[in-house]
Length: 421
Figure 1 (cartoon, rainbow, N blue to C red):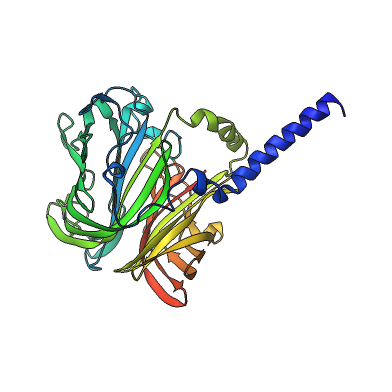
Figure 2: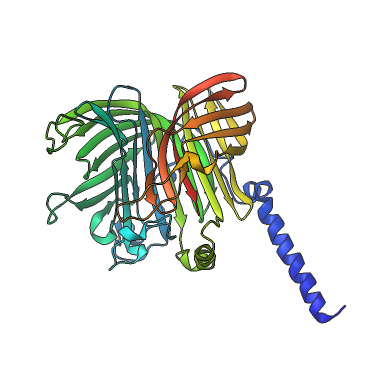
């Protein structure tokens, strides 16, 4: 055998071994690295709710101007119990940095004078039914901003109290609080505004059960905690308009009570991922239909003591995350495998953001089939509102569903995220 043939043999063995490690990552990563399956589902240690990746000057002082080793994100969503109020869902988030990949981040909104490590992200999504002269219209009311970390982020290092400020819509020389999350498990207080929709909300959250997606120390941790919300939402311009040609000014306030989730994710980010992704971006310019990574994440609520979710992340033919869980009648049941059946492309919608960038298309109806430790799970989900384009490759949405779990009929509503890169 020639020396070149030996090199080829060894290269093939190494590449084959790496592929097998990735292909069957679910068999070893949870045993060696990821603590997600071993973590408690009813209590949250303080270290999991506090900011993890930040830069300190002193133990109790934060350096907001320096480059941080990673990002933290706090997220929540609530689905109102009352079907007759205009608001159909609220999704909000505060992030201390960007993910670092164009298409997941919306670089069109990032300040040109600042780098990704110097920005924070604020998001508030409030799908709302509004009426104009008796005609109903659906509005997503997505408020999405990237803002300078040094001047717009307020955060405490030893307790969960994080806030982002932004410029007033009507006066660009004044800043106001866009969003704030504070508290200690299982109780959190949330104050958010949607400046474009002239809406504000105050919520009290009480957590109950935690669904762990990942917990790899020093790399990535993410969980979703299900619980109940109670508070109010105020539309300063109202939602019922007699004359569509006039700016409305009739304030409306609604009690907001319902189930939902509180999430915290944090990850080390030594660099942006755009340079690594550039070869695939070049391939997509040559063949726009090429897709390399699909991410589908859903949290569903069948009833007061019934909720669950799944995360399906597949790239280059390999499942990197294919798991979830259901809290069902006092028990936790693990979802071991998820398959999603999508309809043909004609039954989908594509939205454009304010810059005119077209987002990923997403379906109006799809079917989820899963294997769990408590029996088969399947449901058909239907999206009624348009998908909300967070970036060119990422959308958020709400949905309703009907199906079966272990022989019992289930139905309800949920929140989801979808990316197709």
